[in-house]
Amino acid sequence: MAYRVSAIVFRFVFALLALGAVGYQLFAIHIPRGYNVVNFFMYVTNLSNILISVVFLVSAILLIADRTPRALDTGVRGAAVVYIAFVGLVFNTLLRDTDLSAINPAVNLILHTILPIVGVADWILWPPDKRLRFSAVW
Image 1: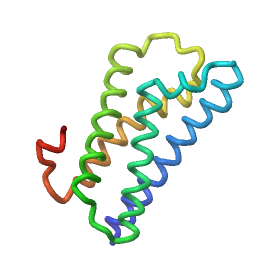
Image 2: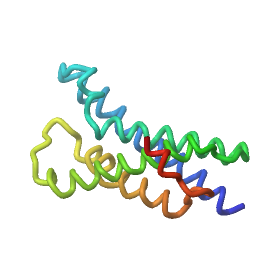
Image 3: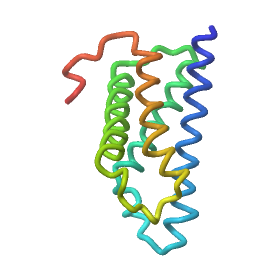
Image 4: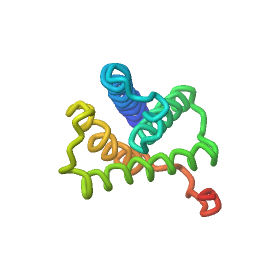
């Protein structure tokens, strides 16, 4: 029981943290500076963080409802983990020293470092019940 509760709390907390960071960046920085809103959603960082947040929320709700994830749920979760890990690896290896003047430093830390670590940790701590088949990649 504690296993389920910890997974639910973990996923809700980090989903809200990521959505809050993305929302702050969009509404407090991006829009007030006159940047194109559509362009905001072209960044892999923003899309990956939104996706992992949705995956966290849905998987937490499935745990609350005591429903078993379907193969599609597990496939989407796996893809979200790969995408968010990619964001963390690329940013922290190639873009760490790049000037990102239009991003809040706390938002930067959350979206490029904390959530990639959390996304991978979630997969490791609470792996899927069934093996993800290779055909799910397509």
